[in-house]
Image 1 (cartoon, rainbow, N blue to C red):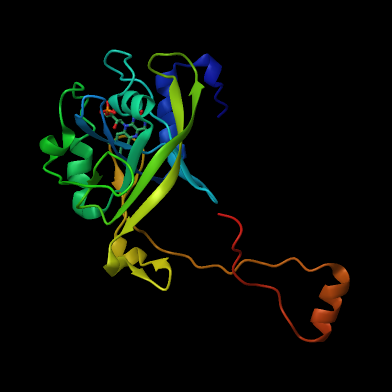
Image 2: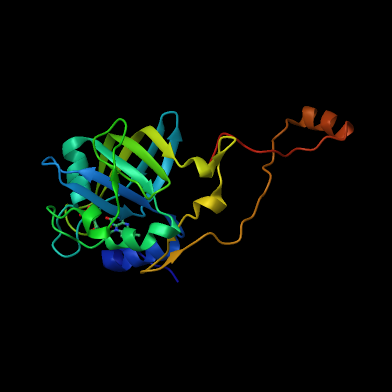
Length: 228
Ligand SMILES: Cc1cc2nc3c(=O)[nH]c(=O)nc-3n(C[C@H](O)[C@H](O)[C@H](O)COP(=O)(O)O)c2cc1C
């Protein structure tokens, strides 16, 4: 089947996207409105971008009910700060509850029962129940599409502080079994860790060096540290 996005509604294209690009990690984003009202919402158009500086991006769109810009976006645009909290199995139900399109004066920490904890560098609180929090400063906003449902803003943030639960962290690595991350699928479905596959990454050797390595009985292989 060939699907031309220009020949269908953005809603159908949205369903196609969220069913095809799976599973997606979830940025559970805490912000503060200029008047100090805390806000919390999940975003699965989210990924890491670079390590130096440590940067992430996520994409708040517009509310389907009234085309309005989302509170998370408005708060970040106004204050330049936010926290990305990792969603785990133990807080999935609460994280999903914060996706209700509440008006800006509603505090989703209170609605969900999650606990605001002070951040070190930025003003928005982090989610105490989330084992990994990333304090971020706004780097750039890229506008995509119209200023109504269907269009979105790509928010790029630089991480200025990590909080990682001690129990998860050993030898500079996160223990993914202990983390119990959750990802979003299409529709209203989520998924937890499935079967894991470990594969060593090949190392390119120029022909002359490869010839010498073969003569010495050496093989390529190893972990790449430069990519994702
Ligand atoms: C798991 C999950 C992922 C979501 N991902 C996105 C997303 O990437 N972009 C978006 O605009 N809305 C996304 N939403 C919807 C927002 O969370 C929802 O519109 C929320 O009410 C926005 O809150 P705010 O207005 O307080 O920022 C997602 C909802 C859920 C449950």
